[in-house]
Image (cartoon, rainbow, N blue to C red; front, side, top):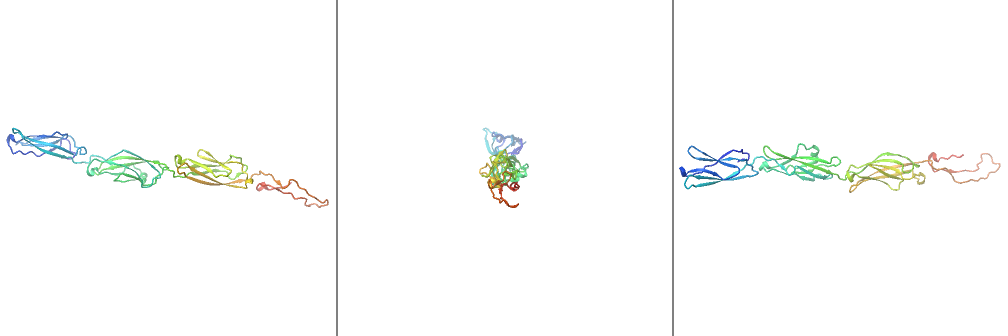
Length: 353
């Protein structure tokens, strides 16, 4: 009997045979107590009895695949005699159950550097129906976006969800995958669940240093702590992976001063082009994040020191002496004076008076 049989449905049974006649023939039937069937006995005009099972409560194969009954026939003799028959009702399956997932919502965390092909998790749905009615296959639900379908793969038979594309925390930190499970019944039935994927940041981006302003060349008489450059530092990673420090190469007369996400380049001391004989300073700025292991990047800057007229001309002697014959003609060389100026260009050109 199919589990879809309606209540009050009737199922005729074979009549008992009794070679006696008259009152000694079969006079009644009895059915063993059970929760699904009752017994109805019809009597023909010739007095013969025909037993029928009547369904009183709907069958459910998943709850009880078989119902065991005992039918007893009793004659009218004295003393009465009886016979029994064992009745086994096999409940036939119909596709009346949809696949059910172990969880309506699955949650998983995955680092953004997870390789393609890595297993995220396995979703599982069960269907208590029998045969094709209970065979479950998996597919993406209609609400699953195209981007999710490019990044994740779902095995239709095992329910395994694997990474099929490169994840990027900076591009998207969260995905929802809608999974559908359907059975092989006609018509098929389905169940649904949601897989929530949280992408965790990995230190996969080096910091970037952007030069936003630079005073170049720098006059040598610029006072200490004068801002000559501004930098913006950024890192697409988050947390400690995105915390960036900026260092400058040693042994240069410049320093870095932090200000929130910005840094300024300042003069650390007086620049004296003449004392160092350096008209150019070659700076290397290194940005490093707080990841483990850290990532870094460098930027190179050349700063020219511009001459200032900060030096007096200096004679090569504090005093000069000369002898001159009294009848020397006009234009006679008396003495040659010499002065030098370490400044550059017009600042170092000397005129005498």
